[in-house]
Length: 460
Image 1 (cartoon, helix red, strand yellow):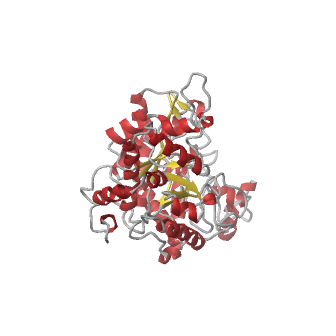
Image 2 (tube, one colour; image 1 turned 45 degrees about the vertical axis):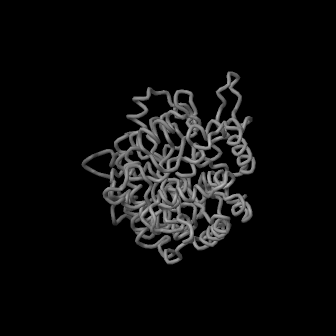
Image 3 (tube, rainbow, N blue to C red; image 1 turned 90 degrees about the vertical axis):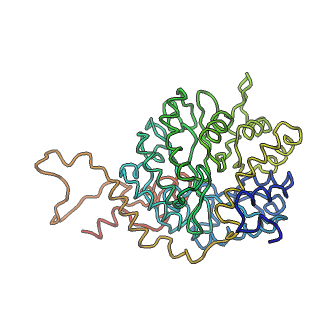
């Protein structure tokens, strides 16, 4: 309690200012850095004051690791962070986008494209609350969800991550934010991060902005729209997320009228932070800086000029950078840019203030470690029943047989045989889809669950 920032009774902003005043440039730059689990050594986390660790899709402690194994791993990293000079806890992030889908045995919910078909905002909120419990049980306080893209072209390979092509449906389903983070109390400041205790997680609205509107549905492509159309179609769901006090927002790989989002100060700083009043942290996507293209006439990939990528992204308003692997180079280059005056120290301080604000709001200074009492929520009956309810509500019957007077469904309960066709009918991995155990998903018994064939055999 000798330092004001360690006192939980002090206001968050006072704690942020006090801690920031004690930090060196090295510690500030470290806080802005998010690195992959596989390169996160205890010494790197402790000595460089690393702010965050991420598990990329499929990056688990070991194959079929359970929630308790994840909690052991995350707690180990957290101990290293707390051993740093100022003892700043780290944020561990994971893509829990349809349940805690990276973890063996967790409850898998339908993808957003299915949930959008339900039009049920209350259901989305309840799924968020269930997901938060299972994520927290694994020791993880942060999920990169929800994706609030408005998919305007089904050729986009990630359209299953979008609730709808209809902006209003996407806005409605953003209620999952309150499920993940909890309901802010009346009078909570607009746009200010909020997490309602240890049973909730830090949420992340993504990918800002226009990722679902690219030409011909090209992934990481270019969205060609006027600002008014971009705001009306693609930005509206972010207003709903910010009104629910979403704590973080992830920037898109895509471009808007040829301008890469990761280096666009107009959209990231002037619009998101200033006009929309977002007070949380803005995070890059996985190796988002490497994907930038330089503004020079020869259109050289910015990845070959990493220093320039860092300069443009940080000055555009990116607060935390998902480096994964090249973090030593990132730390060196960003430090050099600050010392040369190319990145103002005020920009660094703004970024670190936002990062610390989220950490204090999430209660990580008071409760940095996992809560093992939550382990029994992982894959529990209540959550699986909720998943079953969401599957039922998401089903869309296009046509019930050739003759309306003789509907095909429901099936005749006295039928002696039912043909279940297609290899996917008995493939749990394919039925779960992408972002399940690994980034792309895979086939086979990749987790605990019931296939369509299993269920029909049980019912008939």
